[in-house]
Each structure stands twice: as C-alpha cells, then as structure tokens.
Figure: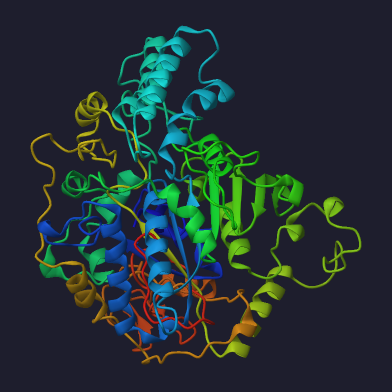
Length: 610
C-alpha cells in the first residue's frame, strides 16, 4: 500500500487522514493492480511456515496468484501486463518476469500471461555496481572531497569491498564488507558535523541527499507520509473498504521482521543476470533513476547497463578476454543520450535501444513519483504508448522537428488532453474491450531499503522504536524490531491463495466477464481506469474507498459521499458512493500495480513484483 498512497495511486493521504487527488496518478491511462508481497507483509497474510526464503519462491507465488486470479476474473486473461516496482523490486521483478516468460515459452497453447514490459525505478538490480558507485557518487555530488579524512576512510572500505568481491564466484545480492562503504560515509560525515545524534541535521538522507535526518536513521524517518499512513491503514473502516475480513485481525505494518528473518536469498543469483534474457524474450525494459538518490544511485545503474550485453549478443563471461565493445548502448547505432522533456521542460535524460530504455530524472529522490508525480506519470504514459505524449511532442516548440505539423500552434483551438482522451477511447471502442493493467508489486518487507549493519540497527531501534521502518539487515532483522522478537503481529492461518479467495470472492461484480478476443490492430495505447485494491461490496462503510481506483473521470465520484455517507445504488461500489462502471474491470483490484492491455490472449498471470 505504500506505493498506492504515497506515490502512484489515485489518492494521496494527508496528515489529517483525508484523501486528496494525486496529480501524478498512474491510473490516468491504465488499470492498476497492487500486490503486497512476499506473503506475510502488508495486507497479505500467510502461515508462518509459508514465508519465502529465495527470490524464485516469490516469483512462483506470484504466478500462483495470477492463476487463481484469472479463475475468478477470466476476462482479465486477454489483457497486456506490465510489472513495476522500485528499489529491491530490482531483484524481484526480473525473477517474476523471467518465470512468466519461461511459462509462456514452455506452453504449447496461448501465452499464460501477456507480459509486455517491466518498469524498475531506482532499482537494487546489480549490487556490485551499486556498491562500487558510492565513492564516485559521493565525489560528484560533493558529499565528500578528494584528499579529505572522510575520503581516506571511505576509499579504504571501497578497496576492502573490491578485494572481497574478487574472492566470490557469483555476484552477491548483499555483502557485509561492501555495506561498510556507505556506512563509513554516513558515520564519518556525522562525526564531522559534531552534532548530537538526535539532531535532524546529523546525517544525510540516503534516499534524498538534499535532506538530512537524525543519526543513525539517515533517511529512515522519510518520507513523512509514513507517520500517518500506518494508523490510517489500521482503521476498521479503511480495512472494511479494502474488503479485509474483520475476523482475520489484520494489523498493517510496512515491513515484517518475521518475513525478513526467513528471507535470506543465499541461493539466489543477482537479478541483473536475467535482464538480457528478458529482452531476448521480447520484454521491454524501462529503468529510471532519480538523481538525488544515494543508496540506489544512477551511477550504479548506468554502470550496470554499460556492463550488460543484450539484443542478440552473448553475455560477457568473466573468464573470457574482454571484447572491444562488451556491452552498453551503442551510440554509433543511434542509441545516444538525449535530453528528456515533460511539457516543454527538461526533466532528465534518456537513452534507448533494443528494447531497453534508461531515464535519469532530475531533482528526484529514491521515490521518483513522490516528489515528481507528473514526471513519473509521463514516464509511464510514454512507455505504454499513450498517443499524443511521445518524447518528440514534449520538447519545447523550438526544438521539435521542423515540418512537424502534428503540434497545434499557439492559441489554436482545441484541447490536447481532450484529443488524447478521445483517441484512446476510440481505440477501445474499435477493440470492443477496455483494459490496460499496470501491476505494481509492493515489496513491503524487502523493498525500499538495502542498508544493512548491526550497529545501525541498534541505533535505529533506540531512536525509532515508536515507528518501525523497513531497513533490512543481513540477518533478516530490520530497524524497529527487537533482536529477540521479530514480529508482534497476529499470525493468521490463511495462506496466499486462501486470502485471495476470501477477499476476491466478496467483491461486488456488476457483470460476469468473458474472455475477450485478441485484436492486434489496436497496438498499445488503450485507456482504462484502474480498478482499486479489493473492490468492496455495495452498502459498505461510508469511508472513502481506496479499493475503487477507477479511471480519472470517476475520481470525483469516489471522493464525494452523499449526506448520509451511504454507498448509493447497487451499481455503486463501496460506502463512499464510488461509482463502478462497465468501462472499468474489477480485475484491477488487488494491492499491487499491474498494467494490463486488452488486445492479447492471456491464460494465466504471474506478477510478484509486477
């Protein structure tokens, strides 16, 4: 639910526990499906013996989820899907996508799930490249200076990490020795300030270097939205709106220490090894990075791409002599870095080639949609092919290609937004279907934080015990957990599939959908509303229903209630009077973001991090 309420969902939660429209919501031209995973985190309940241990297990669970999901909503199997996530989702998403592609490749019939692309924001994809990027990033951003005492300590940790990596046969997902590079930078900078640990200026925020925090929180108190999101998601009326059974006694937490303790990923290879396979299988990959993020910074992900070979080339083996051009984008073939614009304003840079696109976004943190909502929305719309918002159309008029007669002149009649909407709806009418689904995997419990150090853990417990956060350490603990007890939540004897059925079976369904036929003529610019997480039955609580994430035109009706706060007629969903129309399918109502399109045949869907 983090991503739904703080980043890309149709609403943002305010400090007074009211909802406002999100100007950068991703459901402008797509359906959103949010999934809390792995099992046991967020609102996803599980037996304690069902907690995952490896990344492949998480991927398998997502495949199982979609298989059961399509049994309930068979009409959703004809949609096109995109998987999206950030931070540690850089590990989950490639595993999930690769599992889906393998399932499709081994199928003798139609695709089990029509996965078109994946989006990874500020991803922890290649840990080695990220570890080795901390020193150059610190120099480039002025976090430390050449020849300083801070640099001497940090560079020594860098050398120790390099030596440690040289002894390893496979790239690690995390490493204690290499973790000390960032830890030492934070420690040395804190000591140089001569401030008390409790001072909010004591430490740099590792997720947004423009900000500071107490030591050793160093960003764990960010963003401020988390402070009021936890009590909001524990309210009985909100849980009822999300269709969470009252008898399950769900206590929402951003992260679960018990899940983190079980998850070791000791046998899991780093997910960057799967990227070339995804592209080979026809999956479009979009990587984007906010330039103010330290912990998963843009230098590390740029170096990842430079070391990657894809698009028909073999992956460079470590025991082979280096090729003249081992990987990366090929400027000689037109894959050059260019400025990227949004509404005529330079918002970053982009580079694209052979189904891989990389965008560096200016003035953005670890959570790009949080502080650049409209920019992140444009990023998605361009990736899924919404008409009228291509990169060329977003340039300043004096930089657009000469002879381009598609752009209206200044003062010309007509509304570009209206034209875009009409074009997208016309495409749907021709297709006879409405669905484009973006699946966002909320990797609560493992996503977002990669900082691991027992010393920092103990400081964080003392300083943040009133509000646990999701910083996971090498042994599976996280800040806010005691060292003896990892989870104070009530365990529920339900499992992923049982929870799915217990929730989805009660959703209000105005019509029983049928599998749609494929129509390849529609390409990929379908406009659809986002069905929210867990469409609740009519006549529910008068609270604003987070689960009715519909198309943007219906957001006003979601926010409004009648005088009694009733749900209205049987044609409406939830107690806030949120109207459900036949143009928005209820398959888009789970706690994870899935982007899906209507024109492909799909039998089963798998998206743990989608």
